[in-house]
Length: 215
Image (cartoon, rainbow, N blue to C red):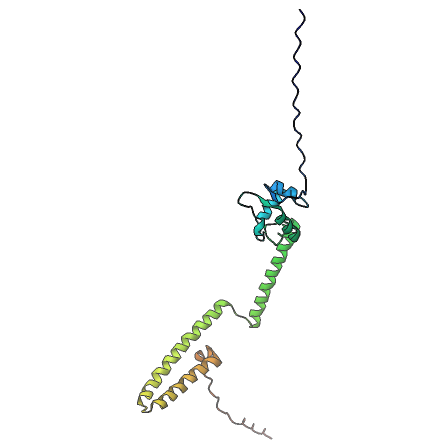
């Protein structure tokens, strides 16, 4: 018996060749960052566009729409204006310093601090500056002496004021006494209260004439 005819082999299905993505093709909307980046001129990578989404100056029409699409024309206009989208803020990020630059920066910072310490020490030696602790101590002493001086004036003038029949005359007298205390404070500071006033030295008169030598 003749052999049965062999069935014809099934035709192999040719896989559809994936067409390359066209770059810079005009379209109003993009469904993803990959699609958006391919339609921009020049094209951008997905990571670059993701960083651009975090920028503070990103226009509202460049943000993702409710249906997940992106406005290609809005992105193109914005990129033509800013030029680069590599940073999250409008100002570019500073490049990290290398080892040599870091060492140099630390040395300069140390020199600046040392110079400041020297200037402070010289100012203290010249008397044009004082330490904070010394200033606080002097002010505290000043107020303590002022308090004692004011209360001393009150104790001194109170009986005299009561004895004066005219209120206007009493006010003038008290004002004069307080003015003396405040004038002492403004001119001499703490030393005006702590140092005793210098007493005038009596005049010793002319020096005695030496006796003539015996002949």
